[in-house]
Amino acid sequence: MTLRFIFLADPMCSWCWGFAPTIDRIRERFPDFPIRLVMGGLYPGVTKPMKPHVKDEVRKHWQHVNEASGQPFDYGFFDREGFVYNTEPPSRAVVAAKKLGSDRPLEFLEVLQGAFYRDNRDVTDTETLADIAAEFGLDRAAFLETFDAENTRQMTERDFAFSRQLGVHGFPTLLGYDEERYRLLSMGYQEWDWLEKVIERWVDKATAAQTVH
Image 1: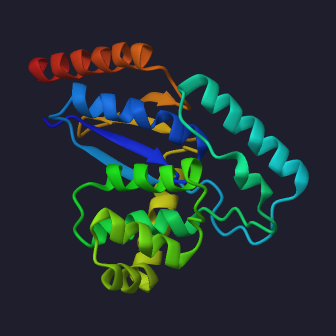
Image 2 (image 1 turned 135 degrees about the horizontal axis):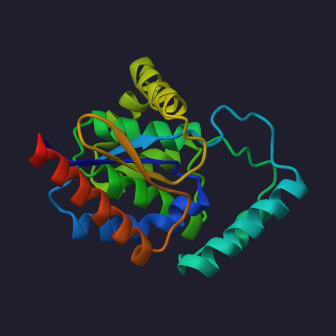
């Protein structure tokens, strides 16, 4: 039996950005457990620009994430006019990176998050996403072709649908999977010290169950 994690996230989810160091800790602490990254679909397909009151709410979230996690934010983002908070393009960028054979999707996700939150780059813009992919080491032209492919759009939608099928609507969410059932380990931002104990209990129980069988 192979134990694995299912990590549901969105590149434009501020709490997911706050959770990035915790994911790094999980990878260090449990290196033999694969992590399947699934794009959850926070606000895919949004077409209307952010209104002032929405910006105010988002700013509060960013401040809370910064306080809880220490992750950096560039609040110059809120000076943007007409920004459309559509999280589908950066989610599709992660899927495209995986299709291109990148075996580091979690790292690519973190690069996208840093570009958006720390560096105030527009990760809803195709050319910006291509630049980031190239900086990450992917072929820029191949990325653009893959990013625009209909199959990539469909694969991204399947990620969103899988998230809904699991009943997950909040991010980040971490599940454990033992080849028989999913176990909710955390929904929303959690401190590493607490989460490590939760994961250890799950591992112990799953391992013990395997021994019984």
